[in-house]
Amino acid sequence: MVEINKLEQTLGLTEDEILRRCSSESLICAPKPGYWTAEIYSFGKYLREYGYYPEWLPLYVSTDHGPAVFDEPLKTELDCDAPVQFYHSPRLVESWKKISTKPCYTILSPFVFYRRTRKITQNIDAKGTLAYPAHTTPNIDDEANYEIYIEQLMSLPKEFHPISVQLHYHDIRKERHKLFLKYKIPVYTAGHYADYRFAERFYEILRQFKYTTSNMVMSCLFYSVEMGIPHSIYGIEPAFNNKSDINLEKGKVNHFKYSNFRKIYDLFKGIHYEINDDQKKIVEQELGINDGIGRLQMSFILYQSLLKIFLRKVRSKLKNINLRML
View 1 (cartoon, rainbow, N blue to C red):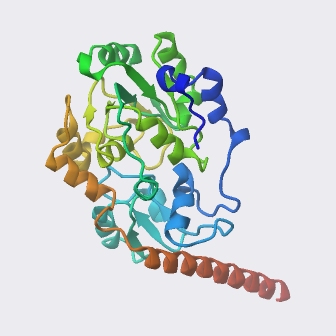
View 2 (spheres, rainbow, N blue to C red):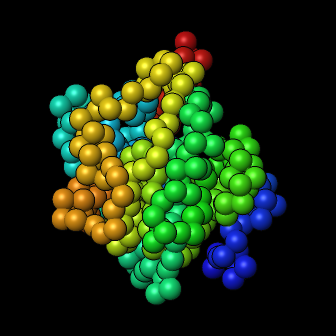
């Protein structure tokens, strides 16, 4: 089980624990990783379990990073040479099929599969709000003033208090946690995105809270609502500056140009005490809950992809041998 004791449940994690969870030296991850997108955030562990596929075999499939807000496949996804592409949403699978002949399927969210098979639910005594500030990457910075965001969080109605935050690995590496600790706001993290304990830690933290919030559309929104926890998009918008991510425009990033992003944003903006039917419906769609392929089909696809890569490598070796003999 996750290493969260009673003290941490009320006070957040210590800075030492935050840094330890985000250290590459303490990772527990796939023995033989294939394509990295299928391994992050515990995806690899639960894709294998869902598809009756052993942990010691590499995963030769590509996936999106979680429930997506984009209207169409990303450039890196289209350029990937994996034999098959997976998306959480059937919306993106249909978009893929219009521009690529490579096989593409909808998956049930690995997070949802993990939560439901382990019967993880919100604690009976859940209280307060867990905030998920928009996270950065090595290629994208957020130049918004997060002291303003902290003031906004603390001004939430009393029903939402106490307030805690959960930060992404990249933001911990950039020491953004120090600002929240400075203002005595409890900080949590699920740790390194390549760690197989990520989903386990994520839900062990999430289940302690009555509400969640973020300042943009993020995966936490979908996972919270699927678990029955109301989510609010609230506070200062991130000011993303893209330095080198090839999937997005350089400089200022405008997520509102994506129609799906705007649709979800409008459903969740403001303060929400309950989950309405429209919110529930779009969350179920974007997590593949009613459209994900079954476990036997997943198993077939995973083994088929393994065979395709094996044959690709054999053909490549034979070709090199023939070239040397010329």
